[in-house]
Amino acid sequence: MQQAGPTQAGAQRRQQTLLLFATIVVALYGLDFAILGYLSPETLAIRLGWAATLAFTAVVLERVGPTAGRVMSGSYGVVAAAAYLGLLLHTGGATSPYFYFLPCLPLVTAMVSNRYLEASFTCGLGTAVSGGWLVYGAQDSLAYALTWAVVVLCLMFFGMYGSAQFQKARSAEAEVQLERSRREAVEKLAVSERRRAQSEKLATIGRLSANVAHELNNPIAYVRSNLNFLEREVLGAGSGPSPDVREAFQDVASGVERIRQIVSDLQGFSRMDGALEPTVCSLAEVVKDAARLASVRLKHVARLRVEVPEALPEVFAVRRRLAQVILNLLVNAGDALESRQSHEGEVRVVGLVEGSSVTLLVEDNGPGFAPEVLPRLFEAFFTTKEPEKGTGLGLALSREFVEQFGGTLSAENRSEGGARLRITLPAHERRQPEPQSAQAALVATTTL
Image 1 (cartoon, helix red, strand yellow):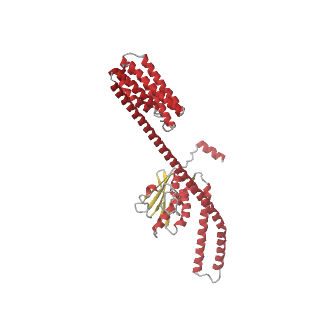
Image 2 (cartoon, rainbow, N blue to C red):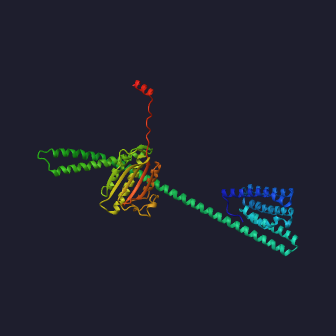
Image 3 (spheres, rainbow, N blue to C red):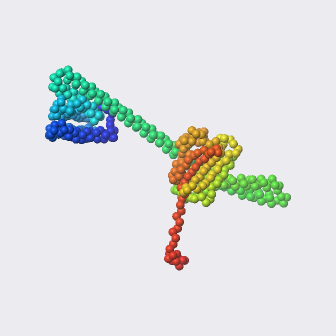
């Protein structure tokens, strides 16, 4: 008859219920006075004994094993039936107002002590016997007394059945909650592991880029030096080179300079990887660094327009992570425009001040976000790209980084077509130096 093992919360709840019922048993002594018209020490003693049994059961029942628990539960049922019979005998027997509540006693016992069903069982048997005896004494009809006892036993059965079903439902609910918590923990662990793996991959790529950039520096220097030498030799010849030769030298020089700039940007981006402490940084400079790297991806896809004023207020952020966020948004815009396969693609980066915040808009004139995609855009591992082009972590990590800086990252579709990503960061307020008093200024001037 024992139900599933109780949880700590369930044990505390049952203990509180038993103690509350013990308090109610004593408090109802006022009804004895209303029925008898005087204070009865006998009924008070019965109620105190009943309440003490309830309190003892509440304290000890959850600390003993199953066998002892069943014995205590059955004993409590006997005490409850005997105590109630004592109250009936002292308040009028079968004519007592308490007599009409007697059939409900097994139901209340099952509700109060629902871990073990023995209490309801013994209380029901005791109530059926004592109630039948009182009815037989008052009516002098054995058939009526037996009928009354059967009704009490039926109520006892319903109470036990309801208590058992309640315990099963609570146990099933606890198992469902436990399983849900386990699944959530497993999912969080999986997300954490995948993010860690992705971070390690990005760090490895960053180190590799730095090494490659370092190795490219020497060959680039040789090429530039030899190019300058050939340019001087050819252009300095007496016959004079043709315009095509001059143009070829200019194109080669421009290409070498472009390669050198890309290598320099890669080295700078890799060096920022170690600086994870937030600092005051210029948003215009961060955008410039990210735009130079993104231009490699956007060069054959779209025109990149940067409209971020140098005078824009500074922000307090981790510069490397902020550059990573902007670079990710620019690359995503390039991917969207590439999927449209248009020769008129354009990506704009606009910086502006809105109240006490600085807003950065990254816009494109691509297809925009589908209605079913927009609400899930920042979910981890959600992506509309092919597996080899995206993991679904870029925007989720970007929003996480921006929120770490006290800002927000949101997405929307432009009314004129295309997508818009909005980064909003609090503007960093520089403290103005306090004006010196006239005496302090005089002292400073004298010292100088």
